[in-house]
Image 1 (tube, helix red, strand yellow):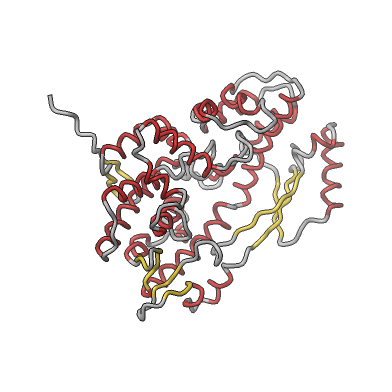
Image 2 (tube, rainbow, N blue to C red):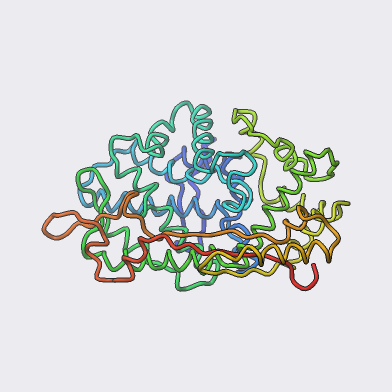
Length: 408
């Protein structure tokens, strides 16, 4: 009997058909670690603002891999040497670059395993998979860590103009229905080249880069940091904080055992193979199931927070360019304390402030280099005639305050 052909294709709404280029890629996609990404939302709680934004990290990982195949083809056509094993390494690295994300992606970043971000967890998952696949991910891991002797390969995976960003901007704008975030990823990829081992953009592609950076700024302030989505994610974080506090106080909590297994540890969890396997069982479904169960808990704060998030009965949120006056925050805390008959510490779950910031382009971290027609390589900011583009290299910080509506 002939072997089954495992080189399947996925029908993607952004790029059309995405193929699995070899057996290793197929087996990685089929692994439970990767299949878990089907249950991790790409944009956290943004679907409460943009109803179509229900796509997952699984979609994004496949899309990023597809763009990587295009980039490899372009660079080879321009004479850049990429061996077959390096191609496989690049595809595996970009495919697995987000495999360490936890429930609701960035919303609960570093929460379940304190002090460890998704990049570190992705590396741990890749190393675990490498053991299972007999070292076939050695090059992918070297590229992911930035240790491979060809710097442009890491830059294709993780830089300010990588396949990750080219996919998520186009994909997120599509699913959110926000056309201003749409970018021409094919044009950008066709303008890529390599000089002295580093990734560059040919001069004629500078306008596409400008559009890309402006689109990224728009997506962050209008979509990723939208005030309602931010508010919902803050409620989600506070639900987890309240649950952890109750557990530390010895309060019994029923439901959400997968989530509770992490929350019952108030100190840092040592990351080992057992914890990694346990984390691999955690996804959006566990968190939502737990919140649905906890909405009936006897603790007023926990139950109310859960009900507010589930029913989208969110707090008010105001965003300003300057910090809020402390006396005004204290006044709102006092009002909530008196109205609800709860303590000041409990009221702080409903009245709080914070800050958000974004820097669309960094000159210091893997700057986007432009290859001029005379062969000189310069920074994109020096070549752009857009004054607004130079402003994107400055960090913008805004301040928010959340508090109840007339009745909680």
